[in-house]
Length: 165
Image (tube, rainbow, N blue to C red; front, top):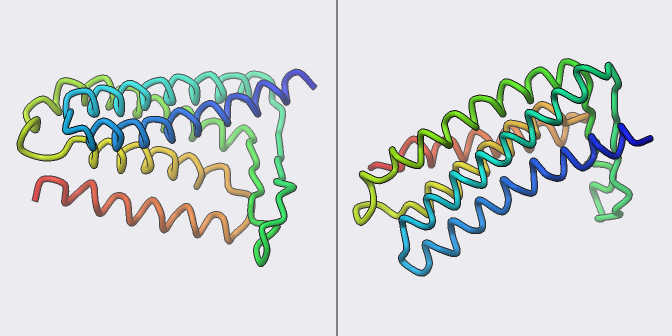
């Protein structure tokens, strides 16, 4: 039971930190503070990457499989939120989180060249949503959630690619 709670908190922490990074970057960008928006977005993404690394290490070393199902009745798709974290998912979460951590640390310095030219908050928002959607693709336990996360990842990656244009 404690291991299950640790994995649940790891997933909530990872998704929560990515969501906080997305929202914080938009909040600071609305105040026309590109530097703080960029630092908040990349800093929270780095913390989300650390949380994902911790989650994946716990699952890989324990050998446990955790399946989570939402009890929310949201209407037409009440059974959409099914997540599963097994060893394979944990391995890919570890890879995604390690790259996210490295890219976030590098991105803090890299984004300085865009201050005053582009809105860093928009990039931070899409960057964090992209990271969250990659993790969601890996842990999705049904086809509808997988397709939703995959499409979200594809659409957000488009906005990241055209950021400088």
